[in-house]
Length: 286
Ligand code: Q0Z
Picture 1 (tube, rainbow, N blue to C red):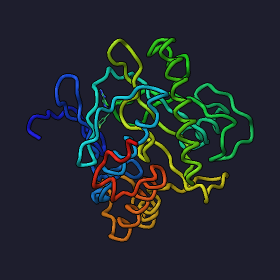
Picture 2 (cartoon, rainbow, N blue to C red):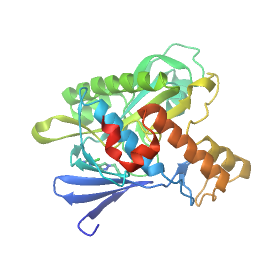
Picture 3 (cartoon, helix red, strand yellow):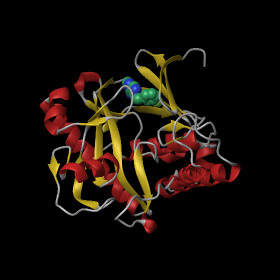
């Protein structure tokens, strides 16, 4: 790919510039757990995540425009329109987990939303909450209030990303729930394109940007197993690894089990066999 200039690296993805208006997002097979990228890859994870994002972008076009131009035949890369990205992460939470649960326990609120008393860890919220955060360059994103969000992007655009984020989460979480997956929360990123219109960018409703829980094991009152990463997490816990880099190598059976869970999530959500996707990624676009 000599004509593509490397622009940025994420933990498990890379961005290249194809020209001044077009980017190439490439999802690797790397996996992170407890915030550390492991030395062992999960075969096909990058294709599963790219295919899922493509699927959701195709199905949510009526809700909001998105950056996707095309899925490449390799199944792991997406050509997309370069946007002016907004400086906030648009998080929607349908359930009380992660920093939402932490903040609720400490203050009874999540990002300025007051919640009923007595909610348990992983409880479904009375209604999904828009809980934006700032993009920390390093370390963890920091939750912000609606007022701080409006300050960062302007009140009008903030109102629009809130409305659109909630509409996207409602659509995707209902779709997933009907297929046995609880989409507990998600992180969306938006930008503005030509003419200042709002455009959904980055990835959408993948297991790396969302918490996927198996619906048949859902039981509030504690943390929930991850649909995709639980084998890897359990193995890391058994080892007694201190969760600092470098992480441990994963054994073959943990790799195979983890790969199977990613493929299962892909097939349940898209209704497409992963082999068919591998042969022609455009099958997920409907
Ligand atoms: C997304 C990220 C990744 C590292 C920039 N359409 C777009 N226009 C402008 N910028 C972006 C996009 Cl998607 C953009 N990120 C997040 C993705 C690796 C960081 F694959 N950063």
